[in-house]
Amino acid sequence: MVEEVKEQGKSKVRTVFFVSDATAITAETLANSVLAQFHGLQYVRWRMPFINTIEKAKEAAMKINEVGKETGNRPIVFSTLVAGSLASTFNEYCNAFVIELFRSFVGPLERELGVPSDHSVGKSHEIGDQERYNKRIEAINYTLSHDDGQTNEGLKEAEVILVGVSRSGKTPTSLYLAMQYGIKAANYPLLPEDFDRGELPPALDNCRDRIFGLSIAPERLSQIRSERRPNSRYASLENCRYEVHEAQKMMENEGIKWLSSTSKSIEEISATILQELKINVSAEMGM
Image (cartoon, rainbow, N blue to C red):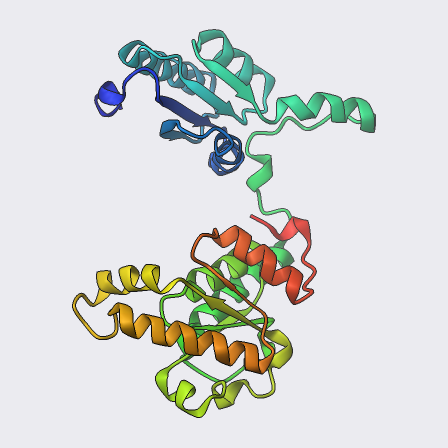
């Protein structure tokens, strides 16, 4: 760990740790949202999951202290340690700037609700409802089998159908909707033959209310396609400009709502899709 951060410098680069008694995904997600507010800085990020014993808490603190000595900068720690003994031990041994993401809210909520929290290790990632869990797995399987227009069977079950040119972000967005919200999402590429007809793929004729379009800047599309098929017509800027133009024109003519994925995260794209298609998902479904 230390060897990889020795050269980071002392002013523009900071080392950030995400410490958790479970997966550290929550700590990392919240921390990245906060860190994004500070421009002009670079971060070396380390995830430290499953710190669920006193010994592991001490060991994690020692590793963080070691990095601080090597870099000359006090590390920044985003912690979601819940159990009091783990958190207090970690804080006692750790010479870093520690932000306790959960404990900042647990105390005030206990006072407001009049009920003590469980302070249970890994509580946020346990499978609390088997039905919700099964729904998410079913959605993932559906989405994988309906990726890139593989099959037209079962389209009536799709809650979201994404359309757009190849490599515009349809697959990762579909999978995010399935994994995060348990939504059955299919996606279809818009192909040259669709542009020649000036119409959507025939299989989508009865699915208009569930269709959403993704577009992308031609320059970015060309870069992405060049990684897959360099020096091909498929990846050429001229062809990408043509496909993007035709796809956007088709979506506008068909009255399909769409957005450009060029500078948007999957989370932003998914939130927009849910809002535009008026799909209400339970907050409990999120992972």
